[in-house]
Amino acid sequence: MNETNQTTHDAEEDVRNRNIKIYVNGEIVPREEARISVYDSGFMLGDGMWEGMRLYNGKWAFFDEHMDRLFDSCKAISLDIGMDRDGILDALTKTAAANGMTHDVHCRLMITRGVKSKPFQHPNLSISGPTIVIIMEHSKPAKHLQAKGISLATVPQVRGLPMSQDAKYNSHSKLNCVIACLQAEQAGADEGLMLDPHGFVNTTNACNFFIVRKGEVWTSTGDYCMNGVTRQKVIDLCRANDIPVFEKNYSLVEAYGADEAFLTGTFGAQTPVSLIDGKKIGSNDGIGPITARLQDLYRDLVAQNTQS
Image 1: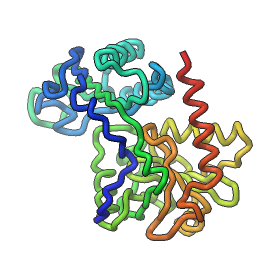
Image 2 (image 1 turned 45 degrees about the vertical axis):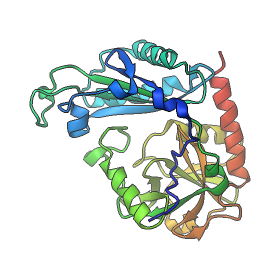
Image 3 (image 1 turned 60 degrees about the vertical axis):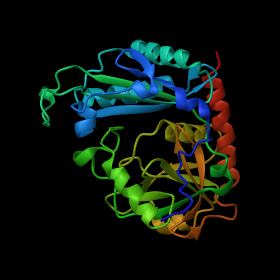
Image 4 (image 1 turned 90 degrees about the horizontal axis):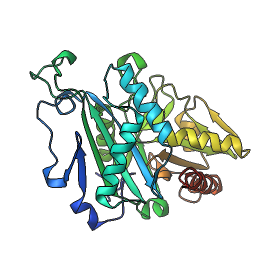
């Protein structure tokens, strides 16, 4: 077991989060009063979708891209959100205002199929309409993530084929990833590096994964991983700034020999990787010149996107 308990979602301690207010189905209530039914589809079956978003300068970064993913996923599983994008933005705005939040805020927006009449699987038993919950916290990624980097262990749990459970669903059914996380911790690492069904390097249990080799940025084909908003922004930034980038199949041999490696996600943006299966990555604990440049470019992109 990894005694440091480091994760890609480590945040600086903020005591204000002890007294946050949470949106639950149209009401904004104190944290200790935020409750849903034990008959809720999300609690009972993991039947729901969610988005993680960040608030900067009073504006949600890449809001349209997050809504594209959310609405596409909910449509695919016939989950009627019950409101349009403007309605969701209004709920987010009211929740942020109730908490006095404008900057360095992380949000988890959760939508489930709602309360069921009986404790069984069939979607028709969900009788109340959707359950919508918004949790916002004052949140800055912990500084030690950049200084130390993340250690990864390759795990036996894989991201499966689209016809089993498509990894592009940002669903409440996260057991696949939880198992991978546990396997990594039991191997003494911070996070699990998951392969695709063919044995190629794919993603981690919580983030998308990139390596840098001889000035080139590589990531998986995208066939078996979450269609991450930050992942796509990094790819776009590479293309716009003459950094060679490839979505391709590659093996652990090529990952072990990388000059740099990093993870992408809405919370941590770009988090350097220092070790994979006990093998040191590069000569700077993973945070080499390409990673650093992409961090700067991404920071500028967020600032541009969240200007009033």
